[in-house]
Amino acid sequence: MLHNIPPILPPEALLYMAQMGHGDTLVIADSNFPAQSMGQRVIRCEGSNASEILDAVVTLFPLDTFVEDRAVTMQVVGEPDTIPPAVGEFQAIIDAKGDNPAPIVSVERFAFYDRARAAFAVIQTGEPRPYGNIILTKGIIV
Image (cartoon, helix red, strand yellow):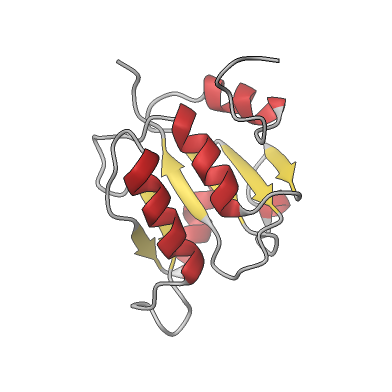
């Protein structure tokens, strides 16, 4: 047990987040996301939704100030201007708890998958809502 670490995050998530350097990316994915085929490091958190995991992650994880797209989500297919409920929650969490808040950038589905394949790790949640996926770019700790 450790103080001030959200208990919702499993030890593997803490290890991978600590191993990441600035510019590395972390995917928080919904239950439908093809996590196993995206990356080598997959952490399973089926008992939590994506918003809960994002809330815990941003309490420990600095967002990169050197890139504009430090938080990226997937556009709704055929409706790129639509903001899904999960993404609205993500923005509120980043605004309230992120150390370097920024507007979330959305990208086309397959561009999102390309970014996810390059991510350091994927946290697969039990999020049932569609488009409950976000990619965060880690910044530096000063």
